[in-house]
Image 1 (cartoon, one colour):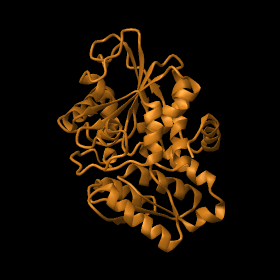
Image 2: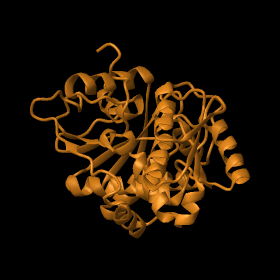
Image 3: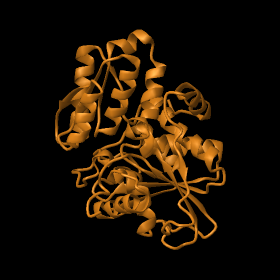
Image 4: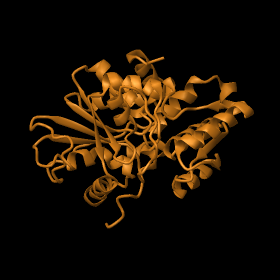
Length: 318
């Protein structure tokens, strides 16, 4: 079921007080020209300051709040590149429910340590998220646990879409929102919610050149499975999205741009050195699009970049 505007508004009411209303940061007049000198107004939506460290807390909180208490108490299970797992574990811990998270071997050790600190059971399986996810689905069935998909669950997407509504409240004059894409849960929710509330807003997606899952799917006119993944941005690296996300993105996203790992790392370094924002590669992907000129705004345009997750990629070379 594709979430509509009412679903996003209901989710916003449901998670109010459970997650943070994150800041909208305007770096002018003393910051660098984040738009590459185009003269546009560029704002940073700091979801890297969200509970659990990323926007994922919104979807996890909405999913948990949508479950019957007895179902939640049996436990939640998921597979994650790290951030979704942290959000599920954080939400479960707050509700006194157990959580199990499957991670691929590519997930950073810090993510696994963070999950254990929240009391989650951590199981490492497979080289990429898709392989970890297959194991999580089998375990969910065998153990009778509630499986929480990181990007194709309507409740999760509705939770992520609350970010789109929040952006419109904080920057009602926004023309363009730039969003990093992993499996597609964030951009599905943000794009659909934002365009339902303000149809003229433009949505630009960003993927790594080493994991162009939705870019290649839209080009082919159908979901495709990538043969391989070649990026260090593990949270942006599924080999395949899902039909629900593909359909929502095909309708609501205006363009998908591709950036390299070094370009994302340069953007992460700028965020750290100029603003003290410690973000992962995915968190800097939206900025990388402007820094590389893959999207060039007009001088009178207001652009919101979603800085979607914390990390330490900006420290390198600092």
